[in-house]
Length: 275
Ligand SMILES: [Zn+2]
View 1: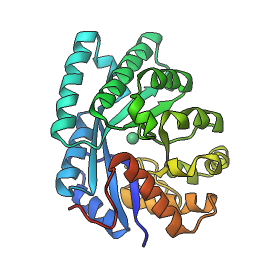
View 2: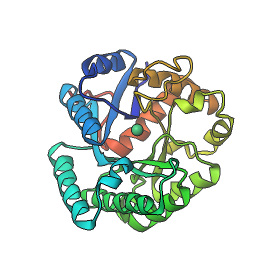
View 3: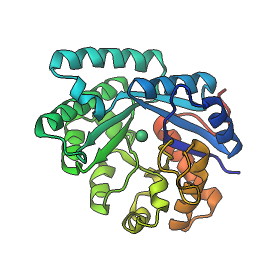
View 4: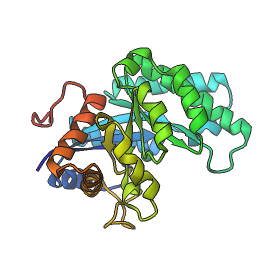
């Protein structure tokens, strides 16, 4: 079985994290990015990394849903200082998830707080040399502007700025993101009946920037749609994306794994277990 890396998933304390990690290994996964974003998800990522060091790589961040609880620059500074401490002491592989979501009727003040939070964390990621796991929904224009203004030149040049997780954008959006050193995380959405537009975009993406993710516990892929999602299900999405790319499964899995490792675990190899 070729290796496969789940490039974006979440755990919560109280979940059967050890069981999900064991099932991920049984399914053939070589690793995963356990993504934070708020206190619950950060704690889940920390727990997963403690259970399976070198297999579950943690990411910590302050996601857009937290923006309204950060009213002014002083509050932002103190949250960022705590995040930096968590990233460094926790051996984080990435900052995330972070980004913009304008799909819930946010007013302009709320959007501005999201933008400030996103920009500040991109700068922190640059300072620490870490890629980001980025959420962008109904906010393509502002996402691009903030990425252009705040990404570290070194990470962009290395093609390691991060991933647009759960990518459902257009070919045009992708062509703006790729030169910024960003990769594209394809989730179970690509398998949904309604996703014809996304399926047409996938073969146009640069192959060395394609990642597979579950975004578990959400978005279980067909044929498991409706079940609570977990990292083991990445195999279904990966097979589906392989068919869209007209690649043999083994070749595609190895490609997605190598792409994820270049981003989140440079220097590592799936054939050399770290744990
Ligand atoms: Zn997520």
